[in-house]
Image (cartoon, rainbow, N blue to C red; front, side, top):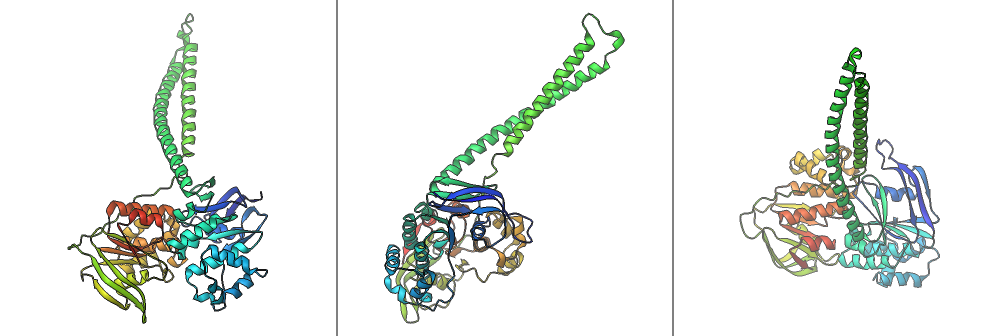
Length: 495
């Protein structure tokens, strides 16, 4: 069994004073199915780039295999998919490729179409097929689910479960549970590896946090008691020392030996005071070793204004069109305050188009869309590519209170350095958090969110889920995270 060894790894981006990794060491077996998790901005993609040798670093990384990264770039998407496959795998045997495509439910005719005409999901599956056809490679798979619908995620999860020898970055809990046997987690203070899937890791983490919280509480009580006792013993020691020093040597009772007795009394009192001080320092030192990896997930608060009416939105037998082509039909549902409706269906079936129609875009449709004029909507799009500027400029652009906006981002684990950066320099997950924080700060009766959780880390997803369950806002959303939908949606509308 071969291993990838990381020894004393330290790395910081040029010009940064903060290390992304500092003196990190661990080992990975090359036949593991390893899930890689952690908060946005902790360095998951950076670590994959370090494995590939893209940045200089301190320390040593040794591997018996070369690395291949997903998604790899396809320079000319007008070429046939078969040509791209042959270029990427020169010794490719067609029957092996067809076998992998069949496992991922990719039709054979995809090979004879230009790669750019494939759906995002088909492109994802084809790239995964080609990666797993390469021999003597350890695969680095970076967020493959972002362009997959729920059915596609289930297919890819089963496919990956049949493979081994990869690191998988994903924030989809059900997806991870279906295909990994170890977890590599970037914590606040260290990196750890555990055997099992995501749910096993989460249970162990909850137990560890609960144990450390209990130990922390006991040690706090012990430290308080020791401090009180140390103060008392210190007072006794001072009093004994004063009595010893203040005794008149000319009047010492030679029978009882008063002066030596006072000296011994003072020595013992000082010894007891010192012992208590040492115990107190040991307890404080033990306490500092606890809760170092406890993730502070402050509750997210949602304030949605009341709507004067029983119906926010109603659709009756709506059909949508691309040009003359009908892409979906028979869409009927009604939303009231507190409704949380999830739109589901395969990619390309019209879910995003419906959301854009409701937000005012000019999309051809038939049927009835009843939307009161006084209804205020806050929209979170899929695409983050056009985001730019500072957080202050962004808040001003959308008319949200900057202080509240920054507070919301802080609860979603934005750190002080991130506030100073421009939005275009953020990771995709951080950009999504900016969109969500802005939406939650807008004075809207209805949130319309289109795949809001792409790239967003698991802990932030849980924070948003809990906020939705607590405050019950009205939301119409498209999201392929099964756990999120199951927990938050009051109704499912399937396209």
